[in-house]
Image 1 (spheres, rainbow, N blue to C red):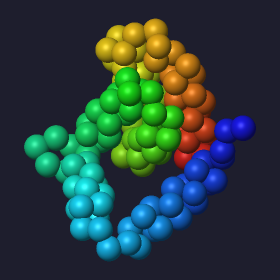
Image 2 (tube, rainbow, N blue to C red; image 1 turned 90 degrees about the vertical axis):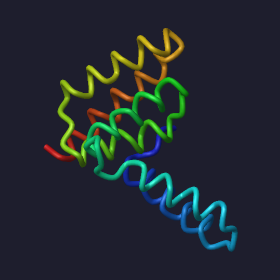
Image 3 (cartoon, helix red, strand yellow; image 1 turned 45 degrees about the vertical axis):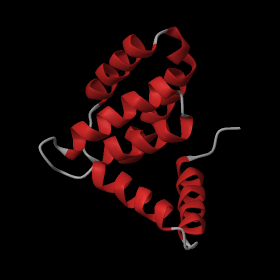
Image 4 (cartoon, one colour; image 1 turned 180 degrees about the horizontal axis):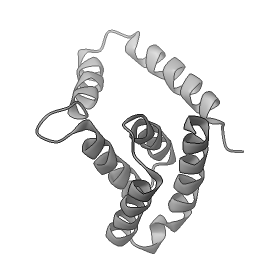
Amino acid sequence: MTKTLAEFQAERIAANERILSGDDRTIKRFFRLDGEAYEEGALPAKTKELLGLVASLVLRCDDCITYHVIQCAQCGVTQAEFEETFAVALIVGGSIVIPHLRRAYARMDEVLQVQG
């Protein structure tokens, strides 16, 4: 059964809090670096999130896809921009991406409906 966006967000936050409650510097540095990679820079944050979405689709990580769909929507990505991004991911990743593309479309619809 697919989690709702709220369930996904709550589970992700709780799991990250647990991970970061430990004392391992490497884990904490990686998490910080991951966050910093998507901040505004020479590329806008919106572009970076779209790149993350393509990578997530090609790597076939549904949790990452959901995360980046949410982040993209928060950056103002439109349905047309999502669809072009999905097309790039499909071309790069090939037909094996299609099951994840189905779920990405469902998440996009859900996120855009919530924002609408």
